[in-house]
Amino acid sequence: MAFSTKQTLISLLLGSMIIGCDDQQTDAVSQQQDTQSTMAKTPVTHTEQVTGKPAVYQMFTRLFGNQNTTNKPWGTIDENGIGKFSDIDSLALNGIKELGITHVWYTGVPHHAVINDYTEYGISNDDPDVVKGRAGSPYAVKDYYNVNPDLADDPANRLAEFEQLIKRTHQHDMKVIIDIVPNHVARGYVSLSKPEGVEDFGETDNTDVAYAKHNNFYYVVGEDFKVPTAENNYQPLGGAATPLSDDKFAESPAKWTGNGARAAQPHFNDWYETVKINYGVRPDGSYDFPRLPEEYRFKSVDQHVAFWQGVDVPNSWVKFRDIALYWLDKGVDGFRYDMSEMVPVEFWSYLNSTIKLKNPDAFLIAEIYNPKQYRNYIQLGKIDYLYDKVDFYDRTKEIMQGTGNTDHLEQIQQQYADIERHLLHFLENHDEQRIASPDFAGNAQLGKPAAVVSTLISRSPTLIYFGQEVGEDGSEETGFGDPTRTTIFDYAGVPAHQRWMNGGKFDGGKLTAKEKDLRDFYQRLMQISYHAPAMNGDYISLHKVNREALTAYNHKHFAFARSSDTQKLVSVSNFDDRKSYQFNLTLPANLMADWGLRSGEYPLTDLLYGNKATLVVNGNNEGSVKVNLAPLESFVYHLN
Image 1 (spheres, rainbow, N blue to C red):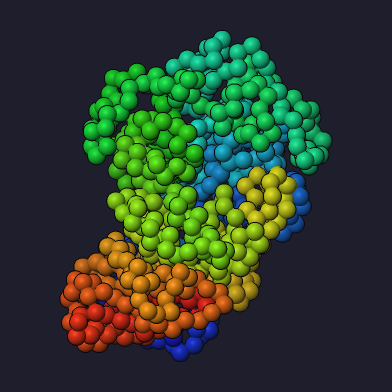
Image 2 (image 1 turned 60 degrees about the horizontal axis):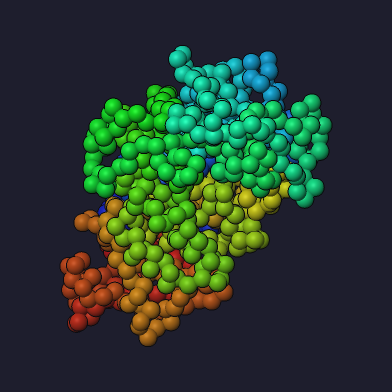
């Protein structure tokens, strides 16, 4: 069965009686399309209370609203088109909000290096020899006090246009996140928009030394920068001629490259388009600032702020603090920090405590790939959420590819039990392959059970990457970089996402049947995450006890319970894409006792599609649920 309306699902999540069901899933999909169409015609004001947990929608801003389908490799902005801030209108925001989203991460907003002529606005041209792609990397920021001119209808008014987008997002009861890239900036960094009294990075550096505490950059003294030697017949802009494409870039002395490479001529595979920021870490790795005492691990934000009062911190710390505060004043609600572990944890204590003092609800996400540092960056660095990539995502990817084992997810959940609420879960982002790409799973449907487990297993937020919800496969060859990941370097259209856009109606009118079904699935799942009180309650493992039982439950299944004072949920998923399974799912006696259930039968309703089941508690107080799982099917049972 399928819930006939979104409100029915919400009513059940909040403990109300089911008010109606349809017998056919196709009817529900049709009704969902009718509802989306109505909403597209009549923008709504959202005032629903979030009783579940946060969810982040990562939008690659310049691609999101682009309706151009040309996708010429190395195509110009005129040839391939671009999305603008203005394309993200009330209809688009309604469509995002329908997914149970609380925060929109607008990726690529700060002004970064681009290959486009904006000299009439006083902006210098960027050199293709140190720019990746034609549209440029969003992680080579050129001016932290303004936004990418590509995204504006009127480049002279670009900052005001972004401020209007912030306002529109807030009107839809969603918060705004943008990137801060603390580890590096563009080689041609220069801010035209910096407030009075603010100095550019490197403006007062002593370039006669490799390192000084208050220098913003590191230098290769006595040597000029040389453009890397290209590999694999690479040519900037695909070989298109421009006045600056001359295999030269003036930088004297040369600066260290963003990934820490110290040669005047970095390798082609280095982050040669960027330069590394100096945070008071000497070239030998020692620190030129006070270390944060261990007892500050669990101290308050106020105490962290007090620790840094009067301390002579490196100048780069102050610059990034001022940048963050500037954007908070503009209405931004949080930040996603790029490559956070390449910056010392003391800086994060300094920055984030200052941010939280100004806005206690600021939403701070950090990209980090070293699990040994997780607790340091959360507890000492005061970062809210870290990528759970190296463990949870990587193991989940293996399971989707048919080579992994769900036992690993159980181990990971136990390993990080003390910090699980701080580990952001995702299945796609701009750095990772699309699930539907042949090099990953080749089929977006394989992501369904993974999405259920990843979204519902913990109290941590979930991140959805735009296009994931309609099965985008990232197959376009657009210029710099390889397919399987939707480009972040070039101008392009995103085909499956464009079918959902439907010429700016944002109603899914051009989606295929499979794409509509997938978006309907994500909408149902994310509404559970958004509304279910149990999402903020306890995780109870059901995996080990069922693996040990003499049933068909195996390493391709994963089951757990979530529990709060007001709600009890049981989730079970089948990662097998070929085989159906039938077994009795065991719920141990201690759990039944905790839930106050005695011998008897208790009705269950699946929150995804309304299927009914029965929890049977025997005389030994052990529970069981008869489960029939089709390939890639999941149930999220609610104890009525």
